[in-house]
Image (cartoon, rainbow, N blue to C red; front, side, top):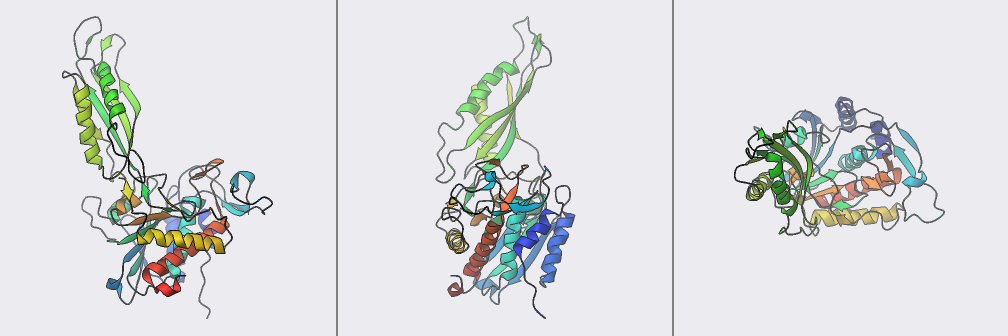
Length: 403
C-alpha cells in the first residue's frame, strides 16, 4: 500500500473552512485526524493543547526542537476562496507582466493556519537522527494564552511540559525569520485624593494630580537604552477616568497605560518603576497606586534571540534557498528581523526562538491578519513547508541531507 502524502495546500483549504473562532474543537479534530493518518499519536493536554512527538534513536544527543502555533482565529468572518491575486494582493517586487499569484482567502488563512500547514508538513516529513521534535499547538493564543501558559509552567500549579532547547513558532512573517518582539503589558495608575466643594480651598484634587502623573509617563523612558533589535520601549496613556460632579474636587482619577517593553524588562519591574516615577511627580496628599491589569495568564514579555544563532541562520538560509528554487522574488523572505506583534513565543524565552511563516500581518494594501482581506499566497505556503522541512532536517538530522 502506498504511504499517504501530506499536501500543505490541501490541508490549508480544509483548515480555512473549519471554524475555530468560537471553539477550536473542530480544528483540533482536523489536526488529530491528520496526524493519525500518518500513524502519529497525539494527545490533548493543558486545556486543549495538542502535543505530538518524534524521537530519534539518540534523543539526548541533540536538541529538543519544538514547533508551535495556535489553532484559534478571530473575527471578522472571511469566507473561503481560492483564486488569482487581486491587485492589492500582489508583491511590489513581482516583475511586470508576471501572472497573478494563486491565493487562498479566508479567516485564519495567514494567522495562523498557513503557518500551521507548513509546520505540519515539516513535522510529518521529519525523521530525526538525533534529538527530538515536538509539535505543540495551543487553543487560545488570540485571547488569554492559558494553554501555552500551562504548557510552559507559567501558570500557577503547572510544570514546563515542553522543556525545549529550540522553538520554531508559526506566525505570518512574510517568510522572514523573526528573532525578537516587544512585550505588551497593561496597567492602571490610580490617584486618590480627598473630595471637597469646588468653591473651597480644601480637599486633594486627584485629577489635578494627573498632570504630574502624565508627565511621569511622558518622560518615563527618557534615559532608556535602545534594544539592538527592537529599538526603544514605549509607554502610552490610553484611557483616563475621574470625577463625579462638576462642582466637586475629585477624589479619584485612573489612567490606563499600554506598555511595549524590550528585554530585560519584566512586568513587575515595569510596574514598580512606574509607581516610583509617578509618586515622585505627584503631590504628597494624593495617594498613588500602580497595578497591572488582572489576567489569568502572564503578560507577554519581550523576547530576543541572537540573529547569529544556529536556529536563525538555518531558517534564513533555508528560506532563501527554497524561495529561489520555487520562484519567489529574491527579496521575499530569508531576512532576520523583529516580529511586529506579541506572540506566545514570549513564553518560550530565553530558549532560542524563531517566529516564521507564510503571509503578512499587513501589506501595502493595509491590514491582512485579523482583517476582512485576510489571504495567503499558495506558493508561499509551499515555500514555508519546504523551509520547515529543511530546517528540521538540518537541526535534527544528517547535515549532508539538508542542502
